[in-house]
Image (tube, rainbow, N blue to C red; front, side, top):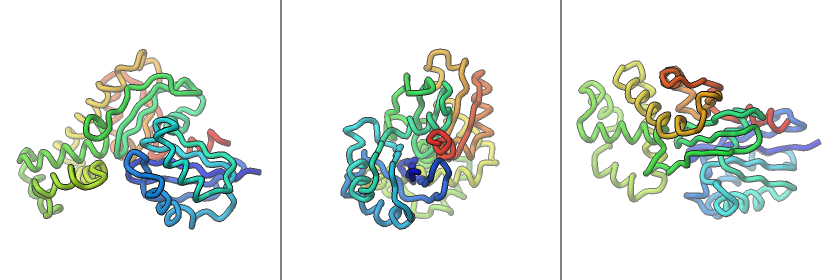
Length: 281
């Protein structure tokens, strides 16, 4: 009889589930954990304040999949923090959110797994491991199609007076604090610029019936498809799966973009956790 703690973490939030003998017995959320931005000393308070209070049984094994956990070295802050806060665990595995997405979406079958949440990523998974990926360059140099990319595109168009008049007025009324200096300060001087810009994707969601917004999202998904999916050999021979809030909430637009590129649409899940619970059962 074993109790597992499984986590799927992005830059904005972390989804956690507790399973006992393969059956989910608990679920909760915490702030995002990303070792690219955080040290172990900064992660430990998040665990102590937002995770430990929801753990009511001894944890035997931990499987943490997260953004910024590219390899053993980059994952070390997360590993150290988990070991410090949950010393009862006899095994702690920290791996990339991309591997977690692939296992949760594809299970033990081959396919293309993609993430469209705060950030964006992609990989071809052979049913056991990731064998090919068009590497993500992160928020400043990539993440096309993600929430941070959509938000950044929206804010830039607002500041450069490129939005239709009605949307410009609504945006200004919704975010009266937004001006050039405020945006530049949050972009270049404050931490987590990806989270800052991703928050503006909520405005897109609130106005998604507007054809301009639909086109903005469609263009972002088309760019993601061209830059990443279609560069995988034989991409059209395998289902393309997605996880993440952006893919989930705009899945109608995403499906149309995939169809226009003659790609097979697979599963579209808000989080890969349900699939990961099955994977570990």
